[in-house]
Amino acid sequence: MSNKEKHNEETEPIDEQAVDTEQPAAEDTPQPTEEDKVQEMGEKLAELNDKYLRLYSEYENYRKRTTQEKADLLLNGSREMMKAILPVIDDFERALSAIGDEEGVLLIYNKMIKILEQKGLKAMEAKGEKFDESLHEAVTQIPAADAGQKGLVMDVIEKGYYLNDKVLRYAKVVVAC
Picture 1 (cartoon, rainbow, N blue to C red):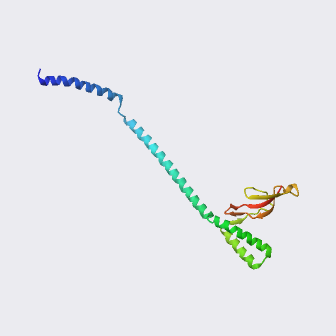
Picture 2: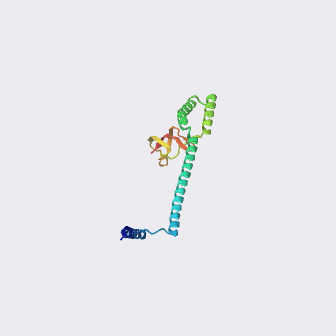
Picture 3: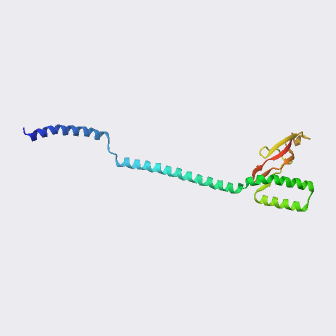
């Protein structure tokens, strides 16, 4: 035998082994068909579409929330200023009741009240109303003259106010029990 033939014999069994080991590996992992690829792409498309819809929905909620917050800020931005002015209004009302209807003071008071009402301030009517803990703060209780007066506000110690239909200050009241 020549060297060339020996070399062929030695390499042939090696080539057969290599071919034999590759064949079963190829059979274990089948190649994806066109249908499998289309199905996989469809699943990916559905997943991406779902992500897009969720992101869009989150953005819309964010936009609505920030728009609402801006509107609330515009409506109630003066809340602290109004709270600071309320004691001055109380003093005005006490001064008017002490000096009577002094025309100059009454004009100033009315002008101030109209300006504050234009900005959303509104006085709470409490006397004679049924006591409501979401609007009134009971300072004291007095015995009711008759059964029909039970639970009613008999007197107002300090007026309550709304700012744009939200309670700015609770009315301090006397309640019949």
